[in-house]
Image (cartoon, rainbow, N blue to C red; front, side, top):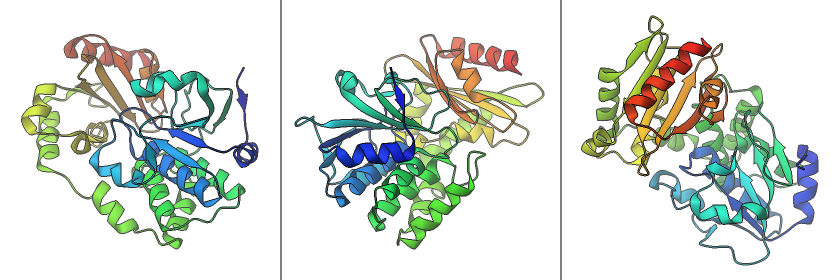
Length: 317
């Protein structure tokens, strides 16, 4: 039986525990990476021993946030925590043997699945980083420059630089706190939101040319063959949040981007504006997330997956 904690209760729990090991999710984004860095640094600043288990899938864009914070393997009797992990299948394969040892999950996904003895889940938070920030404040920590930049990375990436519908007043106040603490927000914004590689532009060009539109252009489905990514020379950093690009096309209310993973699975990412439910589409395939952003995996061909997703969108319209 999982016990749901408040922020105050989570702060109390962390206050009496020690030797923390923090896990992030597979295909890590700015929220899970930034939140893990914030939590690790915050706990250390409070006199705790804390490490992040090195994520084998972390990309160059975010690796600097975990510099000096990681271990390659568990080293003792850790209190294991997860951040921004909505379900066990979101853990990297390397982390899954630790599943039964995870004590506390901190998350903000609306369709999250309980899998730990304790959890702190707030679907109303714009990013998991906001929740962890609140908990650390309850514990009496002070935000410094390094923590601020980790926190800002978490919140800004999950809110689309404060453009998505999940952005709240709390998200904006958190960003203000990051600026007040000396975080270089301009540099982060420049790197994450205002710079495109040629490889990414090539992939975007392919998506524009091959997008399939339904419901008079309200829905878009964009299958992206792995061969196209390889020909463009695109890395995971180049393709981060590429799923949001088709949704930015005028008139599109909900868009799905489908990518071929190395294991043969088709990774689906759906983005939607308010009034449409990306999570409901992905839930039909065993996935989940938020109404505005969700994901799932399918064991079928890229073409079959594209048709299945289009049908799911139509059925839920």
